[in-house]
Image (tube, rainbow, N blue to C red; front, side, top):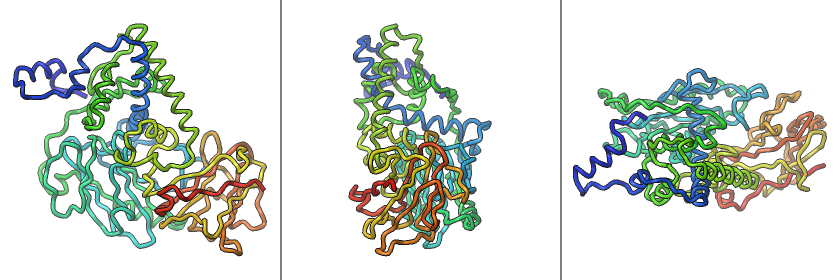
Length: 465
C-alpha cells in the first residue's frame, strides 16, 4: 500500500505533536530489533505462519478473482458480482469439492472509502439462498439469506471498521467487518437442471451499490491505490509469507484480543506495512524462520487429517475463540465453509472397517427412520475422486443424491443409499462410483437442526456390502 508517510516519520510526529497521543505498543515494538534467540524466533514463526495461512489463502483467491483480469476466475474487480449458473461436471476443475446444490455468486468489496449496500429479492418459501460475508481473517462476520434475514426483499449495509455514519433509511441491517476488504460468497439453491432459469433470474436480482449511489449523493474521495504484492507459490507460503502478511495487516485494525499477539509477532518482523526481506536476516534467524514454518506446516497437516466434520471450523471471531490452528485447518480442508448454523458438512473416505473407499467395491449408507439428515432446507450427498476431489464421470451423469430427489424409502421409513460402480437393478438411490481409484463422500445439510449444531447427530458409517 502507498502510505503518505513512513513509520519513522509517524512515530516522530507523535512525539512532536503531543505526549498525549498514544501509539499502539505493537507498532512501537515493530521498530525494535528482531529477536536473536533462535528458539524464540522459531516458536514465533511457527505461530505466525499458522495465524497467516488462512489470510494468505484468502489473498490468493482475491488475487485471482479481483486483481488479475487475466485469470479464468476473475469476477470483474471490486464491487461486481460474477454469477455461476451452470451445472458442475467432471470437466469443471477450477475448484475442489464443487457442488450442484447452490450455484455461486462471488463479489469483493473495498470498504475504505465508504460502505456498500447489498440488495436481495423476495423468494418463494421453497427457495434457499444465502450470502456469506467473509473478512480478511476468513471469519464469517455476517449473513444475508433465508435462514438469517428471511425471504423478503431487503437492503443491507456492509461497513468497514472505521465507518461512523448514520444508518440510512431503508437499510434493514448493518453488517460490520473488522477488515477493509470483504468477500461475498452467494449461494442460490438449485433443485435440478430444469430449475436453472429460475436460479439465474434470482441471481440477476442480487445488487451491489456503493453507499453514495444508494443515496444518490456525490462520490467520496477514492481510497489510496494499493500496490498489491504479486502472489507466488511456494515462495509466499515459505519465508515470503511475512511480507504478504504485513501488507494484509494494514487493512486489518488490531482487535483488542490480539494486541499481545501482535506485539509478540513484531519480534520477528510481523507488523502492518513493515517491509520484510528474509535476506536481511542473520543465518541463524533465517534457519529459525524456515524451521518454524516447517513445524507449522507439519502441525497443520496433522490437524487437518483429524477433521471429521465442520463443527467449530467456521464462524465469526466469537465463535472461533481465536483458535488459529482451527482457522488454518478450515482453510486447508475447505476454505469458505459456512458457519454451522447455516450449513453442516461431514463425510468420509473410509468404510466402517476403516478401509479406504475404492472403485470396484459396493457400499451402502443406511439412515434409520429416526436418523435421517435433519435439515430445514435440504441435504445432499456428493462423491469425489481422490486425490483431486473432483466430480466423477458416470453413465447417468449423476454426481450427488439429495433430499430433493425422488429417493425410495425403506419399508420401515429409513433410507438406504447405494454407492458402487456397476448400476444396481433399482437406480433411484444409486450414486455412481468411479471406475478406478479411491474416492470420498461429502454430506451437506443446509439449515441443520439444533441437534446437529450441538454435535449430537452423526452421519452413519459407510458399510461395504
